[in-house]
Length: 209
Image (cartoon, rainbow, N blue to C red; front, top):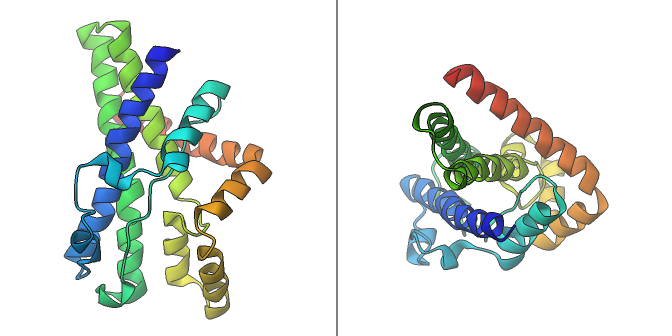
């Protein structure tokens, strides 16, 4: 179990850092230099990670046998500076989960090669297995259309004004609201994440064979 915890921590550090870095990078490319000015365009994981959502909750899920999911410290975005208005914000939001999805896909390729071609030792297979499952868990969790998660930015781009105002009020509670959701609707959340992870694994297997 100690080895699993260490592996998951390493995967979290890399995956969440790249997730948040891509948020800031896409925002910068779309005209908002807020993240750059605040030092968020960096590979330093300590700049991006939230102790609760990036470390404690994923490890609790690991130890209890649930799907591993989490989130990082949101990158500050000035939507008034972004090109394409709400759709620019949606593109910034998508950059994070899609980064995790791409990381999971390449990890799946390396896991496949480790098992079928290289005959890699168990610890290598375990690393790539956690790499895939953790990144897919982050992908699925962050796509939830609940502020301040990334999926809410996509909903915001198409929602009517009344829904937008409600989402803005929810946003003010930040990750506290997400923690409440985890405790109140944990079973439903696990079902959602498990469904998305299984779909992605099916897709990967269909592509790789």
